[in-house]
Length: 145
Length: 145
Image 1: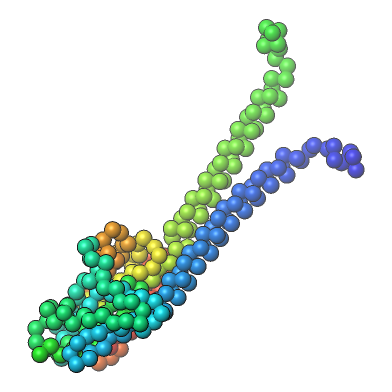
Image 2 (image 1 turned 90 degrees about the vertical axis):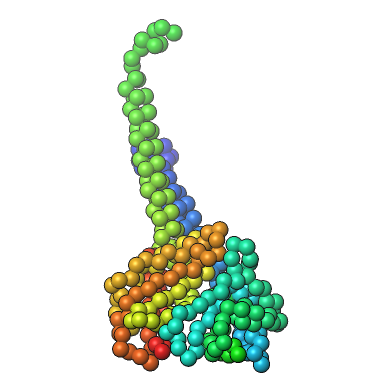
């Protein structure tokens, strides 16, 4: 046994293999941890998206964007389409720009977006759609008299 | 001292050991560099596919053409949409759309116009399938007016 332990031939191969395995383990664990981190971030994002529902209601000519989920909602864009002729150009109003972070609607509360739609449309029948920063949308019909 | 310097015995073993260490070091550095590059390519490429999210915010049918507006809200810096299928038919005249998360919020939105592959299909549903460069697939359905 002592003789075997004293034998030095083949040590280099073992050390080399161990070094290679250490490098491989280091790289693979790095990739695994990074992927795990990204997956967790995406799970969190999807959770936020599902928890930040939004609905758009036309209440007697006033357009209300309601945040019906448990999280605040940030409106970034309004789309306006001609309801009687959808082939006419679709128009959008950017609420989120370099100068503005969009319209924040607190969870459980509402925001009046009529001013944007009214000031950008002539008289007519329109379909109004809102888009949030987490990709949620809501649609309603609006008649601008 | 002079005698020691002139003594050439054991020069070869020392030289060969240094040479061997040098070769092993270079070899291991190459292997390490390869794996680091491999993992970085994976992280920037297909590995980040899970962090991509796209919302089709608007589809406009007009003059035998379709204008599709996209919004990227995932956790990646840029999304490159390079293939579009409409009702399982690959659109040939589709040009890449790059959605970039930069200092300007508007660069996360992108627009592309393609020829309508079914110009006479009024009132029928169109299923859009978008494929990104990293391999993510997003599907949505719109009714042609």
